[in-house]
Image (spheres, rainbow, N blue to C red):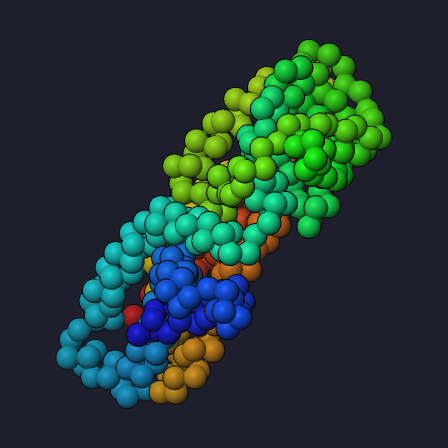
Length: 354
């Protein structure tokens, strides 16, 4: 029941913001909204499953303790560890479900949802120049854009396959010349990294690329929407594309950090998310016993607080995903380790009646 409630709440936020206004304005039919909701369900389960398991555990054991049933169970010769074994096994089973959702079904459904939303609302800039992954739509070039703020580009990397050079720029702007069917990408404040030669800097560098206007639509998902296998393939592709160290070693290391670390972070994030159900259950059981309350709102409040703490580490890691010196891929494992160790200690104390 708690999983269904959280699924509904998370779905409501996405649908109200992105799809429902189109339904109210008559731009889409109800069937399209239902399709969008169905595609979002596996995506939100990545968050709803751990939150639901934590909330259910707190509510059940809070009531169990408040009604003195735990005392009765102990008087009957049943230990707390024996009592909770089926629940721990259930949490491990849900970890398997979470792994499938996080690493395969969730990303694929999210990509399908984005494609549906694109057909309804999205224009050129976000379709062809998305953030965070390699763009191969244009012959002779491969692009990487760190940020795209409605056409204002930041942290750009251009792989010029013809010259076998890499161009890095702090800023950029894109212009679509429909008359001549070309895309003009202007780079500002950047550096050239030719293979085997010293780098050179520039203030402005325009690139003109032929562009087929009929080829509109998202062809590849962003890093956040890739499956585990796609991320693994993307990592190997980027390592191969960057190649061995260049003459400007310092600039090459910055380039490697910009392209490689975000993919490694996403791989660790998907795996770490899969163990959230077990960590939440392990800490939820002793906390429910200690709270010793019948009220549902208390259990929900504690669940939301613990969830906020857990996902705050994820957000911190995501904010540092281009800074390998901060080890963002290890930050996502901190809440799992913290919750499991703290939960095991509290559970041991509760079993001893401390």
